[in-house]
View 1 (tube, one colour):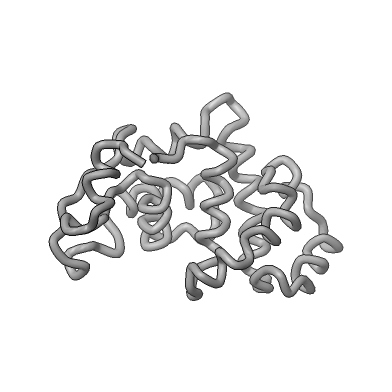
View 2 (cartoon, helix red, strand yellow):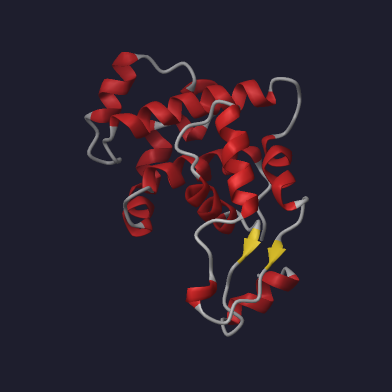
Length: 168
């Protein structure tokens, strides 16, 4: 099902950034610890992390200990708060790049599935302008796939039609 919850979308964005250069299996194994040490991915808490908290995060073997990724998480929380300060939902901001509904692709082979699209390019640029970090077009496209904004299941995959019609 497509994801529209602001906090869940923020969590997914942070985990996508943590995953950059790594496997999803690595991040999924660490997800529970991420939720613990990043205060349930609550942007209003993360935005106020100080150097002591950053040092503790970088010492925690339960997460990816990369200073740039931790710094991006904090900056992304601040950007999230700024973006939503006037009452605009983070979900609305993100879903505008697909006109509010999932893009239904009909790929026959993995070779057809792009790493980025004009929509992910536009999302990446807009997020960068809004102050988000670790939001390149390829990461944005992976985020769009994971959030259900894009159905890239191959036509031969049993999930393709289920996702297309909204079945679980």
